Image (tube, rainbow over all chains, first blue to last red; front, top):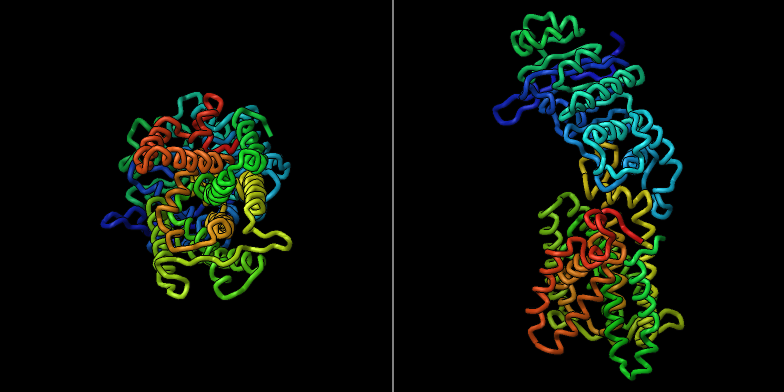
Length: 252
Length: 321
């Protein structure tokens, strides 16, 4: 494996008596697509929230790109190149797809204490925004209000917004949630395309998709990584079989 | 600027305001000018409030405090015999700017209902602070001996005050038109609909919201200076929570987060007050149901009623004009 871009060292997060993240140590290599799977309640969303800074770990460390970021505020992390997308689509519904993406570009175009020029006609924002929409295949839908996009398109827009922040590492929280088979297939295609360009940490329920795109997979159970390895290794892992996957899922 | 029905009506309203002194002189009704000057001054404060309430989604229940600060700046300076306009403006703007920076920094740590309560709490504190200023009239307030002089302009003169208020109102409308479309405005509006998402994109939203809060407070203080010139009197009642509530009602009545909503709201609210007061002392009894109807049936405020079909729902986010 290549040198680690993101690393968690014995990360712990408790909610009352429940340990959602239990001494978790993960390494995400530069350039890989690393999937985290696990049954409901395994602590996947809690993990993402800690990596993004929305939750503070009780103990342990998070290292990103050679820097400790365990307690860094949420808004600073995208500036280092660590950006998340949301499981529940959280785009700005009354803005168009292009405006949504332009806003994401703006987050990285220096400070926003600019009070006079209209942002909607600013080529410095619009050009990169169009590029990000092109990357996810939404360029035709740029002028459509986000609320009017189909569900799958909204998820694509989510990813375009994350891409517009020029991340080194993309945290994708269930990008296929609620998608039909056709939309899922398109998302898999998009992930395969992005895979060479940046590092991705993917949390996903759709096993077909995970095994199709991941370089490595970590299996989370009760906040602990019980196995990490290539899709083949995970498929063949006895403990994973017993703890989580069930025979059917492994016939993928 | 797209000329839709709403913009056209508002431009007509502004043109009417520009000509009103002429009409008042012809009709021999000097009271009109005083009434409409008050409308414009409160509209100016409402435009300021709209910046954070309408576009920023932060319900401040204490903005009358900044109006009062502006008015007290004039009163206190005159009490100590300081004449002239520059000190008035300087004291009003510096005091409101500094105070709103401190208070905003505290209030903006909270959101939602807590933000409402804490802004109300600060406003109530300022109420009792002004009451405790025995030198400056305490509970009863104080008369202001003379108005603000800006070079050749003497705001005590009702025509001068009228047009100064008119121009400042237009300037504030233009400023907020530019502001909400700028990069800064995009951050404010984005944080209104999804603060968490803005942070996840990399925006330190706090400092932008604080800046918007200070700008809105300073605009209100400016309105306070004008108000002091209109009434030549200031009292703790200026910062009472009902005054803050009145400003909120204006913004909501006219249309939250629309450019001209605060102006329309101020005009309609004060006109209704005035008209109903002609018929009965209990005008509030009749005003209440009207407000309830507007809130129930015109979710985007009165301006929302005029919005093209299908756009009304989003009029909160997209300022028109």
